[in-house]
Image (tube, rainbow, N blue to C red; front, side):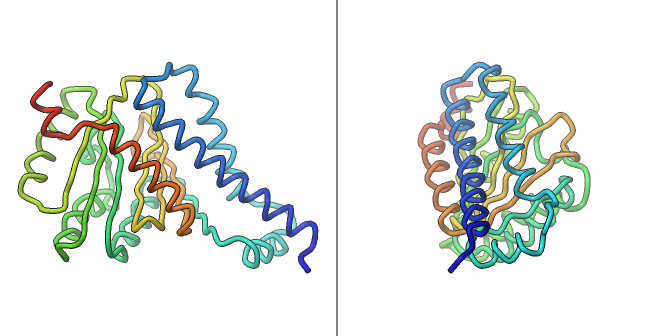
Length: 236
């Protein structure tokens, strides 16, 4: 029989993961209905608190690790820099077999990320897609300035000539940064918090088919609310 401490640890970890899912839903709502920035600040702090609590060192770490191994299926990894985050994400993309869902809700295109790992990740996506006709990539982006408009036009050309590559645009007029994510095969979830300096972007990843399924459902809701890239470019 599991100890009371093990049960409490299990419950706490599930509540923390649930908090991240709730914050993700809020970020989708904020992007779609243009929630005022002041109302977006508390969820961001909740997400940061949950992530720190899940990955920060704790007393009696051996007991906690053993409890997690026996009672929790969610694997959580923290990355303190964009370089580390994209190294892990690139490795995960190589192992993906079916579909990848992405968001890029920033005011700068991917090439503004400095470092080898982000460059390899963004270039590797199309290589991954070309392996099989059954693979697909969905990408939701935000276009708030001329620089992102130019990048959106390049994406449009890629989508026209690359089967399985689909792009939509969501209205994210609020000034508050939004949580970005990559979902691989509805099983692995990689989350980053946008910031003024891309290289310092922290991230966290979770591997679990149930949690991945939740994120996939919310991504699909965001996808349905977004506008096809072709329609967006014709109207703007």
